Image (cartoon, rainbow over all chains, first blue to last red; front, side):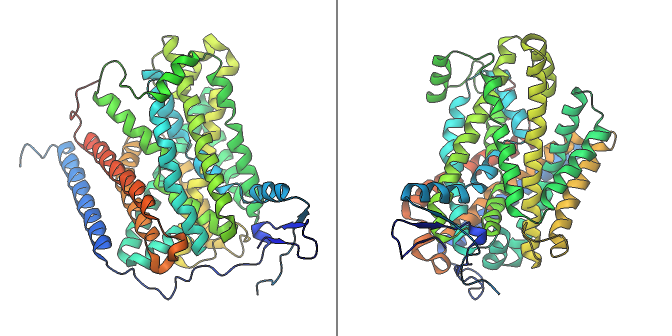
Length: 72
Length: 430
């Protein structure tokens, strides 16, 4: 917490964050999982698609390195 | 029990002094996260870009400046608003599957990147005629002692000092500089170097983007801000810290490119930065060679401490362990244990003769390609979570336009990198 000195307006008290009183942060514990709005659902779906594509590319590369692609 | 009044503070008489001092107290995480990203891999990539294409890719760095800032600015808001790390947030809001996926991917990618950091230290030591079997363990011990003091402030001051040592890149860059007109032209006007769009150039461009924006940065800065306990009122100063860090990092990266450009101007071909340092040392003096090698070690040391901490913080958050640099080893054994394990295992792997370093570098590229877009999507979704952040800290519409554009570009580049790695020959050979 950084505060102006109320007894003398010309004075300013500067406090390092680690020396300051801990402030109440945004509460996240009671929230649970995020609500699946259309935007969240589409984003996660796109991410899944991207990951599947990357895995397929990786598999293709590994099969190619193992010399199995020509035999399939 | 938390104290009701500040433990100590400094009284100043003017608003100006108050602002400057507050900024200096908040300053640190932004500079460190950005400059630590100029790690060993980045030194190699930027120098290679300069050695192959001169100053022709400086414009890319200018484009990356706002991109890195906007991404990390989101992390700053999230860290200050929640006081929690990124890994804990993903677990809490996206569930166990995505949380575990992010954590495992982060730990694996971080570890492989750490191996490349120590490989660079070993390479530089070899060229300085110091045995890696002696120098690498010493470096690992020094990097471990750095975090074990139980003081966040001490760690931060030392690391900020290491960041500022990178100012020496300016001296190297201007030892054999291109003309000012050339630098300004190639910084402002995007151009494709002679030879056109080929596989080598595409790979390098994607590599530059990938090395400038790394997944561990998101996890590191948010945890660092939480550990430093930055307050809501610190947001503007933390943003300024991040902006200064981004600008400093991009300037240093430009200097690395200009140092590589010296090799091109003197007709040396590029194999690795240490070899290039040796070649340039013959022309520009032994101090030039020693300077590059020492800065390589400094870059790897910075990368190592930041990446290992991002792993330790992330694991500590998810496991519910004590995870703060303010804690002693006795109070946070798991947190420090992860850090020490990461550093020791990576250093040990490098010392194994014939370790598969090429395979590790390839794995870093592929994993980064997978990790970066997914980490940024989670970040973007968290910053749009008004239920959690409220209007004050959540993204504004203009934030979303900018950030989704960045995400789409990163997705495309990551895909190009992955396709290039798994299917070489996509682009004409360079």
